[in-house]
Image (tube, rainbow over all chains, first blue to last red; front, side):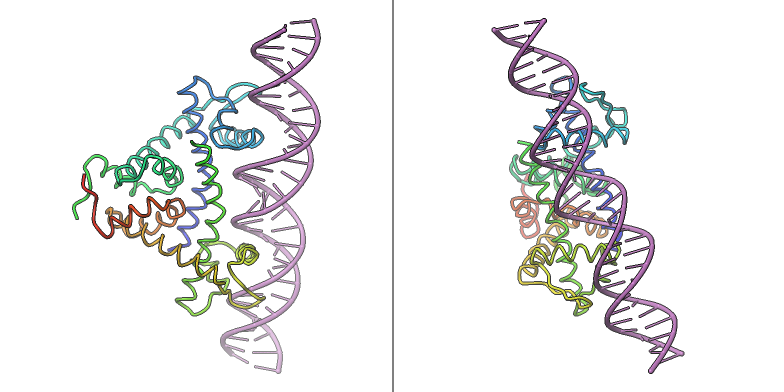
Length: 136
Length: 136
DNA sequence: AGCTCGAGTTAGCCAATGCTAACTTTTTCG
DNA sequence: CGAAAAAGTTAGCATTGGCTAACTCGAGCT
């Protein structure tokens, strides 16, 4: 069974960047009204050239729209993905906090983990947040 | 705080493949005595060319040794990394099982998650496995 | 108005990871 | 033994996701 597992992980990988970006873009818009490339430069600690590159791919894939020198906007699909990612992120982070992990670690680890959590695992985590720990 | 987080995730990424490979190589050696490239082809569902490529990088990085048409061997460093990855993997997988996730999902998700779990989170998971769930 | 400076863009480079196709070596079996 | 199959290698290519360097645009200040 491992082969299919790794195929899935490779596919997940491709969407990780997209999810992280739309989430960050949605955050920037929520906090500052608009999202400029510089917001993403700071957020991800990469150069503008890299941000530009990535935004180009996201636009190609129908998640964002931009015109030169204009702020970055999310398409409907982009907004949908952002909302969904955010929810997943919050569940994972909340779960780690409940597990007793420090806020800083929960924030960091949830960024990496959220992309690899299946629906089933996510539901199990959600259950803990609403109903408490499973019985032994 | 996000910038450093993403820098770390990018660095983690680089070692993911190495960890997965040495783990798979150690498994193959444990199960069949030697590890051939074909074992990895099946395990990761990639072509031999890709395996060859990757093995070349691992050799460059001092984790494995091979000679043409010979089985793949782990160096001391490779064995160390394999053992460490395996332990981490087992904790994550065991924890997911304890959470109530099915065996199949736990196996799949732990593959993706293990690379993004900090020491602190890993310890929290280990604690659950030995001492049960934290008090509310 | 003009100039500067920050932000954005473009071009060109690199490494990792994947692929296919063509070739060589090894193994296996009739 | 010898030929076919399996395994391994090599070459060439694409994409992602980074980078630097050089250029352009636009905003704000004097």
